[in-house]
Length: 228
Length: 179
Image 1 (cartoon, rainbow over the protein chains, first blue to last red):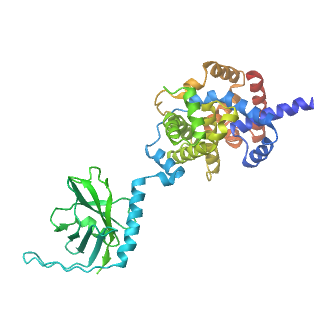
Image 2 (cartoon, one colour):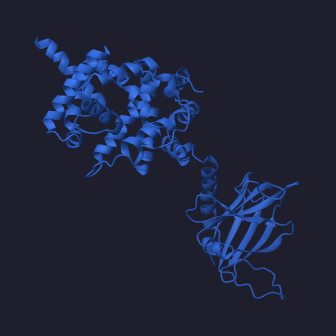
């Protein structure tokens, strides 16, 4: 009789385990037995399979769309947003290069406009110097003066200028550069604080600029914004 | 519609590290498993966390699936339910407020409909109906709402040890009926 009682005990224990009724200590003690006792594992499996019809009462609910991306970001962190991480890598190397060379701009004064008094600048340069664009910025007026000193867009393509704010996840487009080497871009007030400590970059894009709002072609040149 | 075999194949491929299969498995089963988390935890933010943890665990454990003998939806539901109850028990001062999420809308057919044969369902229902009504209710409450012995004792207004004895005897009786 003792062994039948023991068996009934195990049936009840396995059922309690399957229902998750045990407190944490009892559950751990029971789990410790499982490695050595395949019969006990089989009992739990039986209970799980026999009780699972109750799960029909769990009404399905579509989870928010963001959950799947969060799970994949947890499991496959290096695969998440590959475009952006490549972008950040490039921005990082450009930062180091540009910090080494601070270029002070001397641009021809246009007598018809208010005096341009930049306090920030960046040399946006390709590693092989095939494209060099000097940018200088006057925060008071929001004017970003662009002076392309070397290189140009290839036929049928355009150069698009991007700002990557310090710590930002994604670049913001500052627009397509005109074919003339010099131009002024007036930034919206919301972007002005982002220039300080930011990085400027130029990518190769189809005519009209990136259709997606993020760089789609090669990142040709990068440079960190520094104080003059 | 996703069949039981489809889900099984997905789990086996996830066990081999197949991310596309993981994505497909999520699409096919996340609504059901989110339903499990919502019912047990009765809190949307906690249920979302539990669902994330469940799929992380599924990715990590799928390589043990082939040898563990479970049918696919039972394995997924059991894993998720256990995880949600762990979270429920870890909740500080956690008394469970019922009935808030019980009217959730069904979002459509799920693999579980194929996984759970009607005969198994009616057999369990039949065996539960042989128990005293309140004891069958306690078993359902433990399964569906993750009630602990303490909560069951409170809800059925009996001493803790009485509830424990009730349920153990009920489980032995249920098992005799089911086997």
